[in-house]
Image: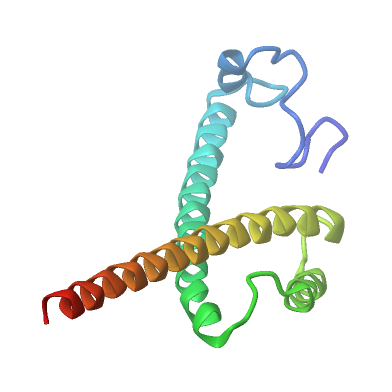
Length: 147
């Protein structure tokens, strides 16, 4: 890479002050090929973003389901040891321009939001259980009165 080329993950080319003009700049030489490459790279990023979104929502659905497993097992939502295991594993597995510190920050956010989904699901389960107990209690009470 020459000193005038920037890595894919770096800031936009010099002189591209506004987002709308960045697509036209693309690189320091501004050729149609560089604009086409920029658009291709953006399509690749868009596809990756869509895949990340799909995977994050799949993870959230699993976290939602995990709440009922934890509730029936009497386990709390928060498991610090498990969360640390995840962070340790992803730090060992990371390769590329994102270092362990960046990856940990991203995964802490993912874990926090997954925990929030679990907590919400756990509260819903508890509320439904409470409503079911009250509903059953009232039915039994009304049967006793009638019977």
